[in-house]
Each structure stands twice: as C-alpha cells, then as structure tokens.
Length: 441
View 1 (spheres, one colour):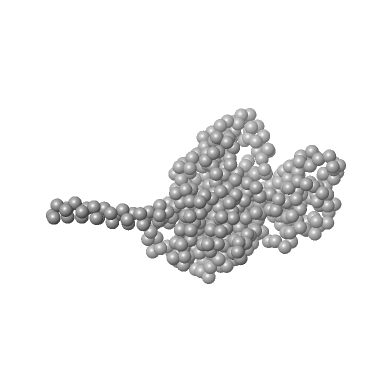
View 2 (cartoon, one colour):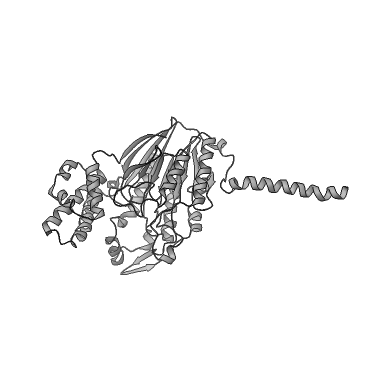
C-alpha cells in the first residue's frame, strides 16, 4: 500500500500541475505582468504627443552629395535633407513641454537602415531621460527592408537592415519593456500609462517576405492570433475599468474614396469587429503622409481613425492629445517650430512643397493628350492650392475660390484616382475638420 502511495501521489500532483498549466497557458502567452495595477499612477489628465512617419536617415549614411540628391528628388516630398534638424527640434520641444508620453506610429526610418535605427534610438533615449516615456511600433519601411541604402558621392550603396529581433532589442526601452501584455504572433503590445487608459500598440506589417520580394510590403494585415490577443486585451481593460486607445501604422478606415489599397489594413473589417467587441472607439495611425480624421461604423459602433501626417513633410505636423478622468479625449495638431533652426525654414519648406506637388502632377498630366499646356498649368496650380490649404490651412486662398476656379473644373474631367482624391478633399473639406477632435471614449 505504501508503495502504491509513493507511486500515485507524485502522479496525482503532476496531473494537477499539468491541468493548471493548460488553464493558465492561454493567458501566460499574452500577459507579461499579472499584478501591474498597483504600480499604475492615477492622474486626472494625461497629455501625450503622436508623431508618425519620421523616415529618419542617419547623417552617417550620407554625404548629401549627388547620389543622395538624386534619390531625394525622386521621392514623395519628404524633406530628408533636413530630417536631422527636424528630429532635433521636435525632441527639444518634447523635452521642454514634457507630455506624459510620446507615441511614434511607425516608419521610424527612411528604409530600415540599421544605423538610422541606432542613431534615432539614441535621440529617443535623451527624450526619455528628460522624463517623457516613448512608445513605438514599426512601419512597413522599418524591418527586413532590402532597400536600406547609404549615399557616398555618386554611389548609392547597400547597407545593413534589421530583423524583428533587432527592432525589439534597439527599442526595448520604448514600450516593449513597459508592456503589460505582449502578442506572440507580432510585435504588438499593450501598455497601461494610467489606471484608466490602456494603449494597444498594433504591429500590422507584412515584412516577412520583404527580402525575397526585394521591396517593402506596403499592405497591412492583422492575423487571427493577434485578433484573439486583442480580445484578451479588451477583457483585461474591462476587468480593470479602463478604456483602450489603439495605435497602428496602416489605417483602420479608408481616408480616401479613391486611394486606399495599400493604405487601409487589408482585413480592416475583422479589426473593426474586434474593436466593437472590446469597446475601442479611437485609433491613431499614419502611413498616408497627410493629416486626416475619418471614421468607420459597424453595427452602430463608430471608430475614429486619426492619421497623423509625416513629420518629415511640410509643415512638420504632429498631434497633441489630452485624456481626462471623465474618459473624454481632445486632439489637435501642432507643427514643429523649425524657424528656431532657420528663420526662413517654413517659407523655404513651403516653396519646396509647392514645387514638388506641381512637378509631380505636371509630369503625370503631361502624358495625357486631352489638355493644352496652359490647361495643365492651371490644373497643377489648383492641386497645389488644394494640398496647401489641406496641409496647413493656408489663409491665402479659400475653398470657395478653389472649387470655383477654372483649374478645378478641368480637374473634374480627369480619370486619375489621385486627381479624384484631390477633388474629393476640396469638395468635402468645408464640412470636415482634420486638425482637431473631441471624443468620449
């Protein structure tokens, strides 16, 4: 009998341990801190900044010579030649104003260069040392990007890029080490900067095949495993009477009726369903490089998506949000005061932006035989006015003047989805405010 007890007792206890492990495992694979609530500060108001698409390029990777200038001029209007000054001035403003935390929603680097990541992380460390927490997620340019380059004289040379593991290692102090829950299927994680506000940092990138495809995958997607993890985060928030704000790189909803493929997350319907289930009504995103606030509705559940424009582009906008204890959130845009670096920076940047937009559309419309050179000029000038008015709410021209112009009437005859997008912006911008929002979470 004694021998039987000595045999069955260890077996009994082993079985109990296995049962407990099976019951706990679905949660332990997600949750990194199970007793976190006692350590969270309760504040009447939280202020945080949101910046996106910095596209930082280390000055160790360029001599700003012919190869760099050729590359930069062929881009999409990002002011990479000034990116060090932009990031440095933005950092100064963050350190002076001291928000509770700063969110960076992806495309931290130009094309995922390892040196750019390392140098940017040093700048972020300085901000954190001033008392401001920083939370980052990757964008489609940041990881496994075979287009990582350095620029020397007339040569554009391959340089090291980083893996997912490298990203976590470099940015471990900017969100990952503070996470109360982590997703095993992606680089997504959950934060609790306050006892009543959680931040869901979603990694929606498809960078696994970047190397074999030889270009950065632009589409976004959230896997079934990550959707399941979002439900776990929702339960965690509900159990602790907290609200959740989501952050993604790609957009949760369409910000254009004509340009959305590659910008809106491919399975956004599944994400919106998960958001409805977990009472998430606000998401911050980026990727599209222009400031836009739009929403999607699923079964009467409205989700607002605030796409913050690229910090690398004129007029260097970022978002300022304030969350109050009554669960209300206010949001407004601000711009980096680059005139403190150079008194003519803003005017020079504005001129450069106009020139870029004009040439971009002139080259596109010139292939069409339906317009005269004067008509193309008029159309390009109108597109410039639309972009300027939309980007910085320029007072030099009104929306009424734009939509009544000859150039605008000509634009309406174009079949280009980009031109249709600009027409849509002009016709709807008098009713839409993309630079401020107040919402009850």
